[in-house]
Length: 120
Image (tube, rainbow, N blue to C red; front, side, top):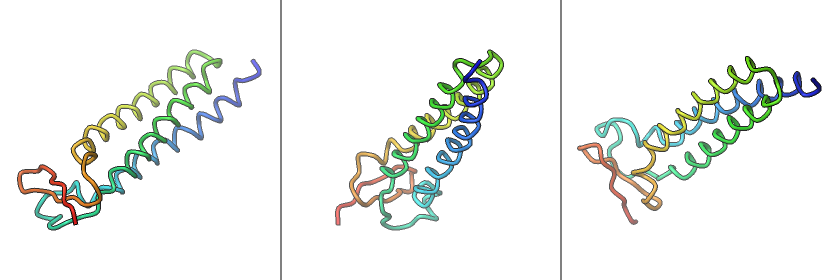
């Protein structure tokens, strides 16, 4: 088995990278996604940066699974399960970002929890 250890090492690097990128995507929009009373006023719409970070996170998780495809079944199951968790987190974040994506550069958080696009 020539690819066993190298694939495991690559997966061991890509899965933490995917998790870190998932957390970084939260940092892009944490100011807007908080409670409406804490984010009063017009904010910059950084959801596109968060979406780009999520795409990189999903690619890293899929790359980790692809790296261990020729390894043992146990390694593939472990990396596949962790990769699925990361991809589930990406899905949750995309669902949270979807109301913000149609907006342009600025956004406000309404009292009812919705988002309103603002043109300056």
